Length: 387
Image (spheres, rainbow, N blue to C red):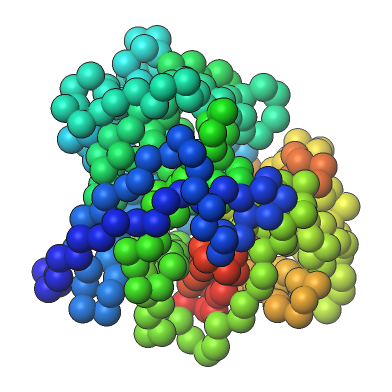
């Protein structure tokens, strides 16, 4: 067990960020957003860690999924809301913190750790505030009232943390997220109205020695989030740094415009990219995806639309590179793009067509190949290959 030091601090008030400018250096408080008391036990290096598991780990590991057509999986963390244990999907692609509430239908509560605000002595309705967030396409979404309550991640507790209590869930299976979603993007992308609310990271960043969180996810489904420190022993070489864009179609997010997809020394096409832990496969536009698989003998487009591919299991998958306009390059080593055996005897893959017309995802293969550092204050993303 790591030795810890207790730090009690008052985090700066939540900040108002324009929907197109998520950088939060100018700390302008939101009138209706409460201040947050934090109680954080930090390691000697000023950090705290949270264990992460992949939702497919119990199915034999994310590298051995037997059916790539229905592949779906996410990174999950144990948390506590109002004294109640919950399991949260970690999502750098959104900015809402919400948990399944007691008012959803009984079938949507099956196998789910819900959050009941009435069971917490510290909960209070955030009067007049409601959240309503959509995911993906086709009208999928979640909505409900907002409460403030104590919320704990690892050894960090925030009192007065805004938490959405979901009473309407449409088009999403609760089993996908087990309890709810913890968004780690920017307040400018938060769906609470009339007053957007801060993310967990934004609430605690003033109590951390560095305003960063770090992902160290593994292909075996294990890993951790680290807050407040960058441990250089986790990666090899030097970190490369990218400034997140502030004017994309998906504002207030960890994204970049005009990214070139490169493989085999050839540029396959250009697309916008989101660094989204809530998106399992790496993805891109259909012409880019088909150009990538054109390099591989025996590659099969199972559905004919680029959404699911198999290749012979002995294939030496080519690397997939992301060349960012400002200079940095991100690489997914080819072997990381190969899944387990599919029903047709070949192996599934982790690079597919993106449903969005405007942006793709770096996906699990990128997160499981690299250590990523998200700097909340500067809106930068840094990464290097895992050690």
